[in-house]
Length: 377
Image 1 (spheres, rainbow, N blue to C red):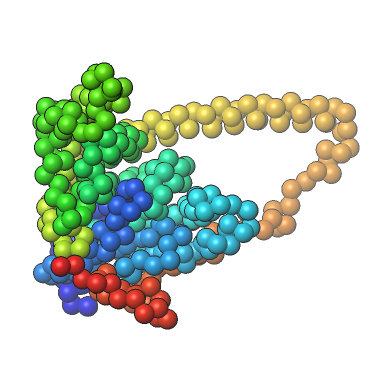
Image 2: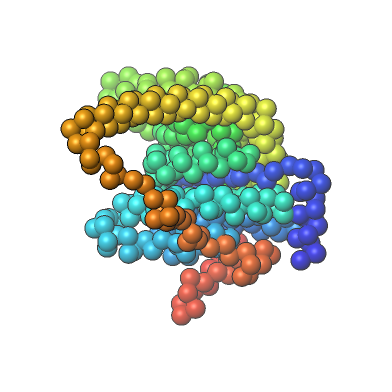
């Protein structure tokens, strides 16, 4: 407890809000293991700085860390599938939608811990499109970004990105997420213990290197020796993305060995400044525009509604003068209803304490399963 208090006092001393890290990536990129390693790294600091972790994947059976808030405590994914007659992806999407209706409670719990944590981590579902392109994902992202400094960490499976076509697909997806969220963005090349990410950084910084790799890749030319359509398209796309690469932060990490996490958190701190200087003013301006537009729409709707009500009331009184006298409002008969009285979100921090984390190399799925993950090397 003393170390946690020391971390909390440090956060309160500098007056900074905790940074929210939203982890997004393709299935199999290693998001959950990346979150586990972030958790371990922050616990290893002096003094320890335990993060506040929120798991947003309702279908996962096991995570290698102990989340403070877990969507599985609120929504039963399998019951959602049965009740609404849905498939796996539809079940995840619907469960996330249901959880989003209570996300104001999640924000409230996070804000209560804002003075004692430095980082809030959101682990998103494995199916990337469910979070990035759904209404619930946009609501969660906007809600968090409007309250706390927020960074998007896009996790890339480095060994699978050595082919130029796969690399380009990842970059295009990352670009689309950046412009959709409009938040500070960090490219995280994961699994560098298997494949170093130097080639990717070189392709991002040197257009000619990517062209050379593309030309030497199999399938670059057709039977007549001419560049294929896909080869020409990727060449054009790399030119388009050149501006996207210029101000983009990219780091290589290994979630197994822990390499690169110091550089990752340095990029996160740099992104905090970017959020405060560039993104926050734009968010505030956008919020003011929305509130002004909403206020004007409400006033117009209210005026139109009152006009219709008065017109209908005048017609009713003209047709039935006696009936209008019987229509009286009794304030004593009105009962207030509080729909938000039930608290469905569970904060596990009080149960286990903030200092726990799991070594993924020794993790077991269930007590009855005799599974022991082999250590690398």
